[in-house]
Length: 594
Ligand SMILES: [Zn+2]
Image (cartoon, rainbow, N blue to C red; front, side, top):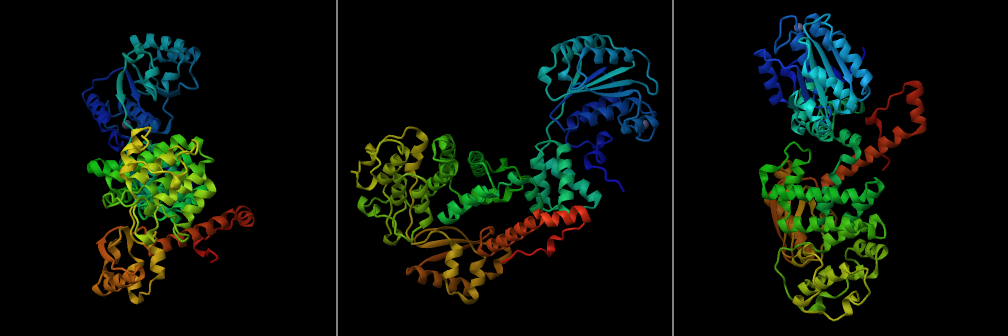
């Protein structure tokens, strides 16, 4: 049995079946019903939105043996011929490859003769803007006084390049770019009819990647079906689309919100391994932050068809508006300065660390003696942060880290002036060292501190890192250290959303809310208070779930599995078996080596 690609098999054959172009369909439908026929139509729109499809439906409407109609029968020789591309009076010509005067003259000479088979000769000129000036002029004469039996359908992705003299003689229809939700919905219909199981999130990913083109969406869907072995799963589509997956951006933000420097740098290393472009990552991060800000201020504006919609909503709820603004500024300024960084990975890491260092806290400024905040970070405190800073950037930068991430065991908080100065250090990293002496240089009054070169960075001064317990935000690491007994089940399914010196805010995914009994809560609270040697109150709420220790372990297992499968697929010997002997790889039989 031969496989027909979806885009062809599912090409709409009637106005009813055309998806997402209701405004054009209605106008054409009415015109045909009322027999108000024009001799030239111009369809504009980006690729894959249905211009050729629409042209064929119009040709059938004009030539159907049941009469001129908005509902061609689809069965007569005219309808079938047009659908199959064998109808002699319907000519599709690609103006990109037949753009000269000779081609046009040949076409126009034939147009004079009456149709052989049908009622009208219909000429479809695709990418008509590619015609040469002479060809346009030749066509213009026919457009001015067309024979009654000739209809022109012109199509273009670039109407700006079509001469006004031609435009003015056509009835113009603008086909819309299809929204991701329309595309995803149509793919669902197609797959249901094809009896191919698919996850909605997978279809949303494909729809987003298709960028408005149904044809591209269906081609990608063909690939996804082949890739997934007759099913379409989210994980496989993510793998197939590769770089389009933006989950790593959420992982970065989540690490920032947990103040988890280790995990943050781990993410950066993974990005390097996956060869993700750092400048693009900063742009994408800025764009994501923009989406988050949008979700916070205008909740209705969110794109609910986005596969990451829920993650985005979740992030919007977790972040403060100031945080979003600040991270956005750091991201775009970081992108601007990326060329000045020792290398792109270092520049990107520096941006992340800057976000981490200037995390807006929950408390107001707490002015203390500057000396208290100037103690260097103890060795055990986010070692990865300090280490990476000093290895990848200048010594000033590690001063910055030490300053803005005060020693937690002393419950020290940074004062505004220190941060102001720290910021001036970071801003003048390339300057001479007069500012950059950091800890030992005299501290200026905050009001007279170095003025920010651009207003954006002023935001930084409002963002102060406040931490009162010796905790790096690594909930999973903390849980591992606690003696919990049965309450471990609850801890494994908690996600830390934020914490301060006295309290931790934990999300428990709906699916595990049964673990929220008094007993486990108490046990967990006791163990944590004991661990930090001070009372820590726990606040539980329902929701989240991507970052619980249990979920993270699951993700790790899935990653190991996929790496193992990848390794098997890429193995020369295995490939030879597949290619030469028709062997099949059964993914479920592959187990990663632990
Ligand atoms: Zn027909």
